[in-house]
Length: 166
Ligand code: UDP
Ligand code: MG
Image (cartoon, rainbow, N blue to C red):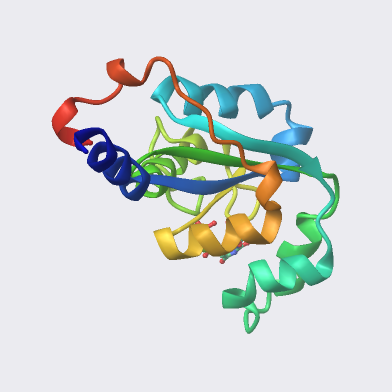
């Protein structure tokens, strides 16, 4: 029974979030750097693939920017090369990943963040990260099928979290 409660809490609390390594990340040879940061932080990689994005998919993904004059420009910028989509899992993963990416504008993003360390641009800002738990669920379903997200034990788990955090 105790074990069941623990498992139940574990499933509820652990979040998954989407990261897209943008074409600028691939072209600048930063894939390893960016993935390494999330790994070292203690996030668990649950899904990863290289894929070409389409205008249709990007129109959905960037629907909140549809009225902006740069809508076509950002969609086009995401189709110049394939991208790498990743699913990262952990406690508060959505917020943790987003804070590691930093603010949208790379010139204003603080040093220590991915955008702050690797980007001089608003558009060419290396990564996309989901902005809320609700958005993350929608975005993961947009870019991954169920069988592309993997559930497996993270063996260093006991060294990442305290009992009372779970
Ligand atoms: N973007 C842009 N100009 C802007 C705002 C956004 O080129 O004035 C691009 C930028 O690449 C950004 C993406 O559109 O990452 C999505 O914008 P959003 O506001 O969702 O920023 P994010 O969540 O990526 O920080
Ligand atoms: Mg956004």
